[in-house]
Amino acid sequence: MRWDTKRQKDKLRERLQQINRVKTWQLLVVLLMSVIVSATFLRLNSLNMMELRHAVVQADETESQEILKAALIDLQEYVSGHMNTSLGNGFYLAKSYERDKLAAQQIAPSGINPNSAEYQAAELECRSQWRYNLESFREDYVKCVQDRVSALSAQADPSASTKLPNPDLYRVNFASPLWSPDPAGFSVLFSVIIVVLIIMRTTGVIALRILLKRRFSEL
Image 1 (tube, helix red, strand yellow):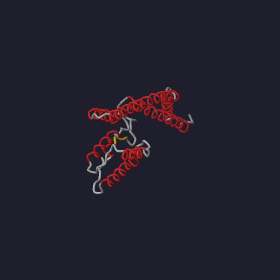
Image 2 (cartoon, rainbow, N blue to C red):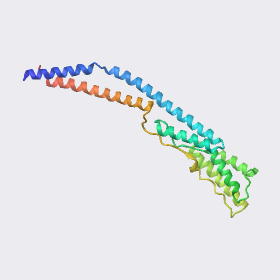
Image 3 (tube, one colour):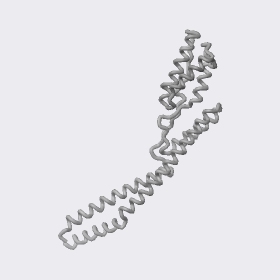
């Protein structure tokens, strides 16, 4: 029985030596390098998304629906296929909204001239309230334009009203995955594996040392 106990102790010591061949500091160095690589790839994903978003904004400034549609498809495909590319609350196609709003006002039976001095003054007044963010665009600028146009329409013809486009239809936002099979995703996965190995190694060494000390201290 004593011989079997000694053999068990030797096996535990052998396993402890095998674990100690890979030092914790070595795993920490690998983890640090992996985290740096992961951060780099994640940053590249974000920069590529911002570049494609800027391309959509530029396409929105043109009057070509084909160019705008192609830019939106490129952005949607990239965001949906890469992690760390969230658009937050999204953004508005402000120029498209302006064009469609102007078209709606021009065909409205209110008699309001969008090029009149009074109308231009209302536009400038509303623009001063837009703080160039998502919430302000909808809550401040769009609401102000709607109120001012309604007031002008009522002055020209109380029975007429201008139906402006719904600003929510011009909001762009796509979902980004939590993990994606790209360089950023695989580098993050590798970092997680290293963290798990460090935890397993640390707990394994502690458990074996406690077992050797408590069960085989008499040998």
